[in-house]
Image (tube, rainbow, N blue to C red; front, top):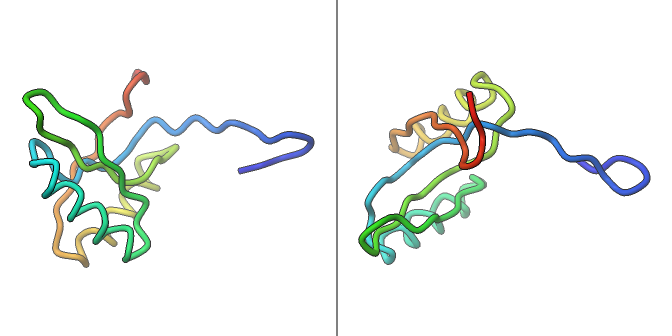
Length: 88
């Protein structure tokens, strides 16, 4: 959200974890497929050379649940998690 004059930061503490411990190649395939469906998916490195696929950035659990419905329509299960650097 950009306000005047230069914008405004919004705290978005929750996100949906779509895949944990995926290979980098599998993570890229999954994230790209989600992006083609309009889902804001991204990849975060995980220990052991693996990767996590995360989707969205939400202010409230209700917003995340709405996005989770889209993931379910794509045949994916996700888990609501706290974003890195935030505390409940």
